[in-house]
Image (cartoon, rainbow, N blue to C red; front, top):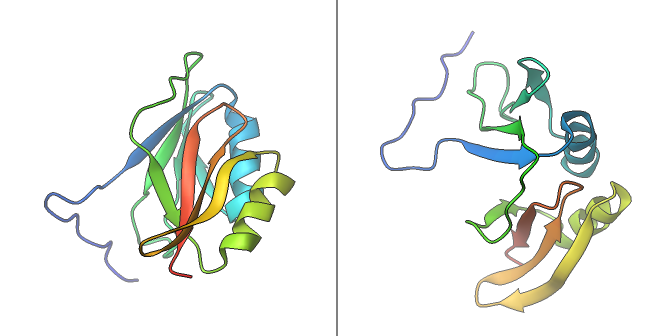
Length: 124
């Protein structure tokens, strides 16, 4: 069994998303991006790292009735941006901007069913 990846100094280590419905958020992110979760009770689900069981969680979904937009923007990387935008729509999210080009690639912004705004980008 491999050792968990070490935490790195001054690197973003964990992202926690407030959501209004844990089950709906898990379904959306699983359908759109293939994410998997560890449940820690009715108000929290950890987002498992895609790098296997030995890797740490990379974030969490926290039950919260007060979703505030306009904070830091979390960006996901995509190997196929158009496919990712379609997956967001198919999973019940809303693409709010793009895809559009920027100096370094292409990206789009979207909202999840709780109203959180995130983005995805690709080099092409």
